[in-house]
Each structure stands twice: as C-alpha cells, then as structure tokens.
Figure 1 (cartoon, one colour):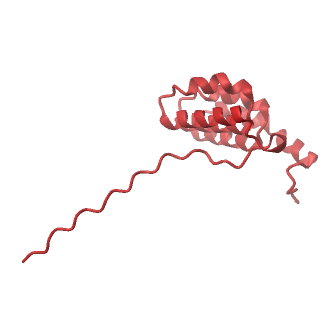
Figure 2 (spheres, helix red, strand yellow):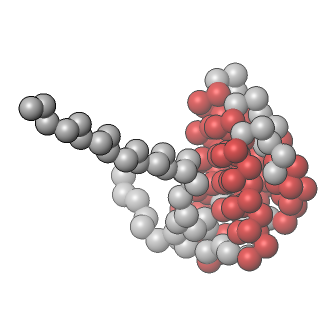
Figure 3 (cartoon, rainbow, N blue to C red):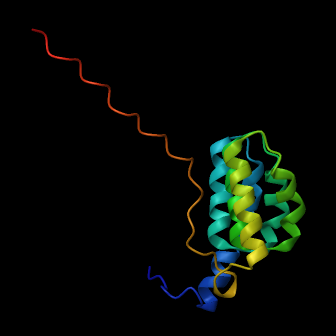
Length: 142
C-alpha cells in the first residue's frame, strides 16, 4: 500500500475525513484511555464536524479526556467551541484549565495552519517540578 505525503491530496483527505464519525463516536467509549485517544486523533484531523462532541467531552469525568478535548478544539479553531472552553476555565484540574486558556487564545488569534489542518503545537505539559538545591555538605570530622 502506498501513502500520500501531501496533506492536500483530495483522495487522502476524503479517506481520512471519513474516519471522523467513528472517532467522534469513540469519545463516549466506556474506557477513559479510548476517549482520550479519540480526542487526540480528532486534534490531528482538525475537522469542525467533531466540535460538538469535543465540547461535550470537556465535561468528561476523566481529566485527561477533558485536556485532550480542549487541545483538539484549539487545533480545529472553531468559534462554536468558545462557550464550552470558557466553562472549562473553571475545571477542577489545573491542566485542563491551562489547556482551555491555550485553546481560547488559539481561536482568538485565528492561529490555525492552512486548510483546516492542525498546527504542530504540543499538548501543554504540566509545569516542570523545581529542581531542589543540593543539600549542604557537612563539615569534615576531625
């Protein structure tokens, strides 16, 4: 099987976009990791047809799903997600709130790549832990 490296190839685009309904359906799977991976996959596809399901996923019981849903919405850039993302600013999980801020800024800036394809922006990672200072060396025994 050969693959097309050109993201603008209409045949490839139609094939990939035909997967959006099935992937969107996986956002309601019983397994949290499946829902999280579905949200990530939708972020890579960047199809606005997934926006209503992704907005609903912002209320998922798993914070990883909510975070990936917000990221996917940042990649799609559809203004219909603004209300759901604004509500996510009050999420109990700081990483979800951070991702919602990122998504809102991306949508406000219109910061999307060509033709609705997602840009290469990473999911916001947790803030790094501070590196502790080395313990003082005790004086030598005499």
